[in-house]
Length: 211
Image 1 (tube, rainbow, N blue to C red):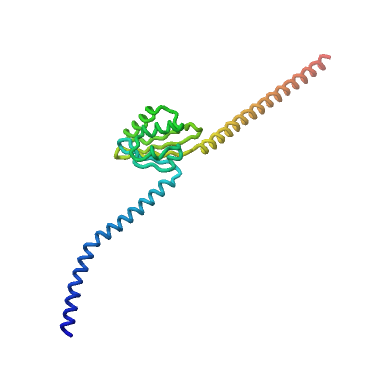
Image 2: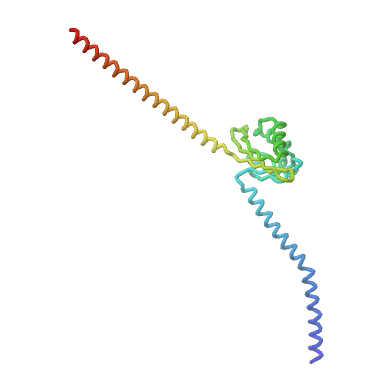
């Protein structure tokens, strides 16, 4: 009985280090798997956030090639994902936008202006008059590595509301000026009539005195 217990204890004593060694060996792989799942989850969350933005977004590297571009940007300009994808250059992107009819400017000047501001580390923004009548606000943010991030937001409706508000303000200003002119004219007429009345009264008084 004692020999059996001793043998069992020795067997357990052998299994324990073996188990510990297995844990030590497998733990890094388990951690890698956990990190891999965490990275995949974070990547999914990032992709979901990127593609659910209201703005179109493109990130370019220092060689002017696209690193990432969201679906909103493609939809905004009716672009093909087969063309506008990682590796596509800024010039290729603009040429593709021109081919779809939503870019009507000079590609050389457009690209040159962007790259000069990025090289200077300057944030820049401008309005794009799309060929289909839409107005898009673009914002470029340079990055430290020489690349940049650009967001494009369709502000057509906002601009329409602003124009209507400006038109209403202009009409109100004109109405105020017209009403002011009418009041001033009325006051001048009333003053003139009083002067005429006073002159007539004075003439009557003079005539009565002479008679």
